[in-house]
Length: 285
Image 1 (cartoon, helix red, strand yellow):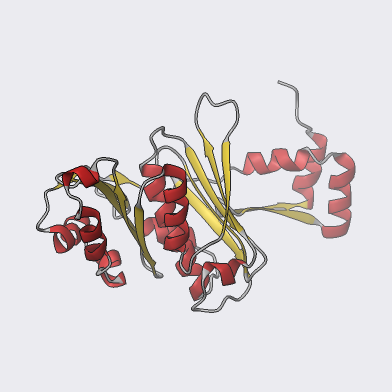
Image 2: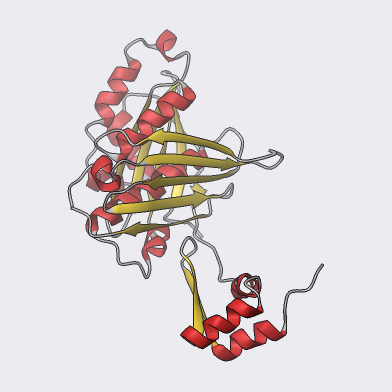
């Protein structure tokens, strides 16, 4: 069964420029489900999901990638997490945000943090960068240029129905093949409108932009949002609080609500369920 949420890599063969097109349909709608994001936060969150998917899909070593934007503006926190299979999740913690504001305004004096976990690494790799640029695309383009030492262009768009990304990167020998190729490709990419980024399929978008170039398009990789509820994990967390704390919660609140914001699940435990946790503490394995 085909997916409407994919990462599709491509190569402009005669120019030594690589790229990818990301389209998130149902996956983006799943990420929004049950959330009451305002328009500005929703747009930013969709763009961040799309760019996380494209960077995850282009990692040299597959791993789990997490981007976190944090600051003191109307949007306090935004996290998107994507594993090696392109299984994605995320959420935002926000107050009412102005519709047309830059990331610097929305996040205040914030920063972008990347965390990359790869099997075999002793500890995750982390990187912090300040929030720069008038758009999220500029912020991530700056980040990729610094981290990979290669010219990079990102175009991002999102509405309530879909999120999309066009990624382009100049490879080391590009100028040897065509000294003007990168500038020409950037100018063509700059003509893309948001409805095209969100509405055209990959082949149609690439033909619209690069029909005079030799474009090799690779098979799509599906992006998914598949993080099942795990009530037992929430129960283990409550057990770890100990008898005294659980009895206090029963006495003061009559129950507990545990939220897994990243995977978008909530677990309610009434007083009887909490008493059962007290009577059945965790056992050593």
